[in-house]
Amino acid sequence: MEQQPSILKEIRPHGTKSFPCAIYRTHSVGKGTLVKHHWHEEVEILYFSGGKFRLEVNMESFPIPSECFCFINPSELHSIITETSDSHFEDAVVFSLGILSFDSYDEAQIHLLRPIQNGKLLFPRCIAPQHPAFVPVRNAFTDIMHSFGQPPAAGSFDSQLVTDNFTSQLYIKASLLYILATLSSHRLFTPTEKDLDKRVESIKTALTYISDNYQNKIYISDLAKQVNLNGQYFCRLFKKAIGRSPMAYINEYRIKQAKRLLENTDIAVTEVCLECGFNNLGNFMQEFRRATGTTPLQYRKKS
Image (cartoon, rainbow, N blue to C red; front, side):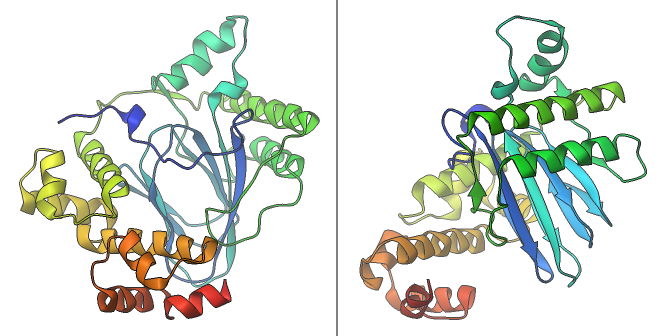
């Protein structure tokens, strides 16, 4: 069963309905996964202030040894891993290309914006400080961060900052267009060369199935069936792409949903357990403590 990338997207909106653009700040405090695998239809611009990271995009790995900018094209599966114990910030701007579209069908729309939206033109993966485009991109990126006001609290990638101020939105749109113009002037956009990677689409289909069905019992055979693969081959492919087994990922996803329920509702722990797909309270408590270092009740009190 083959699904299109347009329906394999992150459900969480970025920005507001009228202005789909937001900024994020994530603080790395040690080695390990900084941002878990996800994808969305929006473009993402990442700024690494320093340190040593690894950016994984569509089953390819890109080392980030120092300060740089990285770009995520629409619908690309990606994650970020911290490889040093140094403390650094990672900032991101996530935006829909629709906010930069023009009513008049001009040359920029025809030769740049529309091809990017259609997946025919790709952003450069990374730009290092020695590249002549780096400084103008950094200046425009800094202007965007300032236009949003106070940066979001460093921590979870779920923490975003949005703006409804139309003057700020004008500055942000102008800065984004300036970044695109800078990349274009240095011929950094490249045409799409390779066909859709079916392995990546298979993983995205499986992740979508998990997010839609985590409250129910999920078997490996269920996931493998979604992508017409043998169960053993699917498990190897999943672990290669995500870095953990399907069942470990499912448990992580369920714990993430449990944390949200504990933070935002007052329903009983037993009900949280059942709502998140755990049929055994003891197993839920064990998995929750392994993931958070505390019990659900203690976590709720701290939250």
